[in-house]
Amino acid sequence: MRHAVREMEPDAVIVMFGGNDSQDMNEAGRHLERFSPEWIDAYHRRVGEAMDILVRGGTRVYWVGMPISRPQRFREWCALMNGIYQQEAETRDAVRFVDCWTLFAGDNGMYAAHLPDGQGKRRLMRTEDGIHLTSAGGDRLAALVWSAMQQDFDLRFE
Image (cartoon, rainbow, N blue to C red):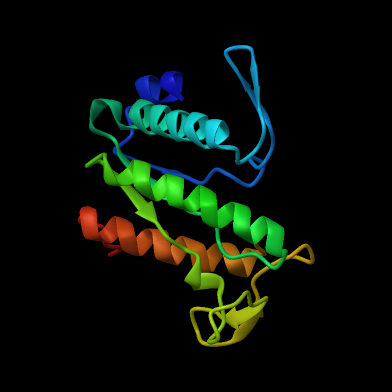
């Protein structure tokens, strides 16, 4: 990330991390069990460091949270990590947390595989695992991120 930001000097960066982060980690030679208090502290530091790297040079960062998922355990992990992303983003003016949790929930607030697309047609938004996005789901998420970016930049298609 350091190299890319320095080399490309972007005005904005969109990132989405976390799908594979729900595992134990090693830090300074210590084994940290996933979601233990020590793990959460280390994850906070790592997320903050990543945000600090990305905002260097005036870059605006759009940190996209994890969407609601079908598997309950994964859903709980994502909710915890989203809280970390949001807390770290709130301490940095140039980072905006883009919350997409409810974007992929049905009217009842729970996971929904099928949702309306941009034209109102019900489409499959998630793959069979209940975690990954389909192309239609990616389009739905991109529209949310685009909307957030339009609030910060003068973005128009002519």
